[in-house]
Image (cartoon, rainbow, N blue to C red; front, side, top):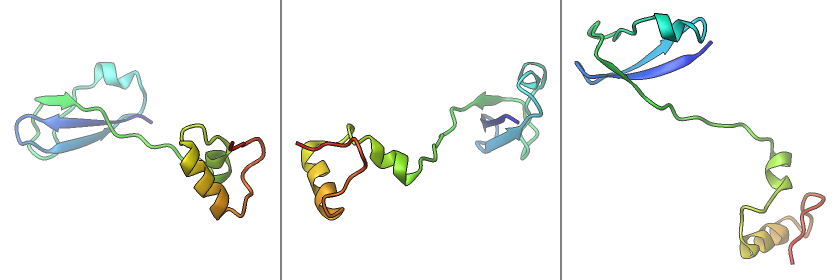
Length: 86
């Protein structure tokens, strides 16, 4: 079920619309739930991703060496298998 966010140009409110299918986006005309206006602009929604602690620490390539050394020190010298800090 896709969720879309729109900004109403008439009243300035943020409108969230739930649709039954992706094909419904082509046929439906979104309306503001506050003022019933049709002058809506589709917004880019914020997304998030849930990552387990195990997978998050598996690849530390996104951090610099100093931070990796601090993580290693705080973890008692044990990091996930395959992670090497020079």
